[in-house]
Image (cartoon, rainbow, N blue to C red; front, side, top):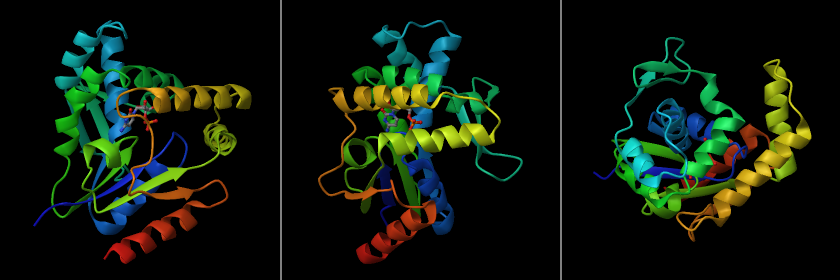
Length: 224
Ligand code: C5P
């Protein structure tokens, strides 16, 4: 039996990570957060003092990324161990996201991470989220969702998320960061952020997480 794959692509802050995690749990399937691999490559480059323009060194780094995804003690999410050290919340910061989108624009880095991403596909199924899951990594996926939302709404969500954690942030700065990252991710020549031809496009700007999740489940049922 082939592994069934569902892909959820979209810009940062669209809710794709949340939806992918909910869906994987609902189905009892594996989960691939592909953005984490690009973020980890950026962190490894920082740790080793590798310049973000040094494509051949970054390619080697990405190909040999020493990373483990372990179930966390709390049972919520995964513990990520990079080169023997636990990576905390720092992985999710906008700064690391911006660095990730720089290394992600390099074809050598993307090629080095391709097989590693495909190796996540194990029975019975996989939910994969990112930018090019449906277009490049899993072109044969059973269901492809492209989840988007306005940049203002995504900045607002990020602002509220940080606020809840007691972290102060400037809304205008968050919006500018999101727009810059969207621009870089959509304009790059390799695997740009765009919906696959056979993707279902969902705009979550005026939808709750539950509403989006229900829509995705509905699509799964339609696809049988
Ligand atoms: O999804 P996340 O915000 O964690 O991704 C961080 C960056 O990694 C993105 O801005 C994008 O440049 C890159 N990325 C990518 N392809 C993917 C997932 C992430 O290029 N499949």
